[in-house]
Length: 91
Image (cartoon, rainbow, N blue to C red):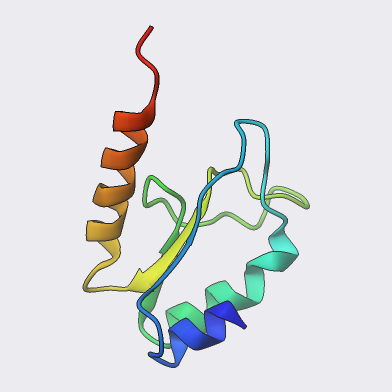
């Protein structure tokens, strides 16, 4: 449903950040939504902006999922990167 809301233009961003370093998203949670977003002119990727790869088994080999329209996708990636870098403990 979240991807449908985004694809229809009723939302601007779908953001799912990793809950831990070891957690991996299940492909069945994102495969259909990925197609909906691309077909509606949007873009989907992980927190680095790389496209999601559904060919590696039952889980995505990526950290998080970001979907947005093409005009703001890279801005969302930049904002997430900035927040993740500022919240990473310095050792």
